Length: 288
Ligand code: AMP
Ligand code: ZN
Ligand code: FE
Ligand code: FE
Image (cartoon, rainbow, N blue to C red):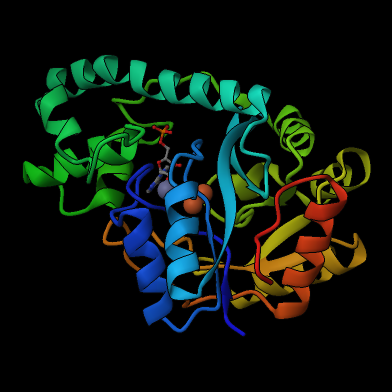
């Protein structure tokens, strides 16, 4: 049984439609795929329908960008009830904030000699309903030939220390965990070893999240986690009784090195995740 629990469609910053993503999961010989777009559940319905047609189990999810110690950290919420209004309202607020600060970022880019227009940014969305943010600004910078790829765009201009960075409203990490729990989701700490996350997500902090806030799991296996990092989180997760997942963070052609199904979750960990979702009153996939 092959299981990949972290993927993005064009509704956030991936490039596949939800249907195409599920077809690609089938081609990658996956039995289970979770759709975890950033701050939106809009692709979940279509993905589940496609999954039903082709016999791939689709676990609905969302990747929530939160902040801790002034840094951006990511949470994966699995199985939130789609009709839980408080979560939907918070996601809408985050999406609006992400988009509303883009004009200020574009002004800064123009001021330093790499102008892109809002139309050029919007043209990077692979379909209607995309939640526009920095990844699409990065893609526009690539399209205009200023940089060669998304990573260079973030390194030179868009990351937190970059000259074009403008912050946006984000939920606090512990409030994000509580909100996802209220929606019935099981909550997994996404890729704690990457970028600035590893600076703030120390062992003590992860232990606090597990003991005081009921964190359910930790993404141990991840393309950008080296062997030592995986080993560290594996042992920490076992000690704290966290579900230890593994996933690709597939973004279609939006990111290289994250091929669908290239990193997977053990079936026993997936079963444990489903039972945690059920215990929290969330939505588990039908037909399992
Ligand atoms: P935004 O929500 O508009 O602030 O954009 C944040 C998103 O950009 C994150 O969720 C990541 O997918 C992506 N991102 C952030 N930092 C980087 C980076 N250094 N390199 C590539 N992608 C990044
Ligand atoms: Zn992303
Ligand atoms: Fe992430
Ligand atoms: Fe992701």
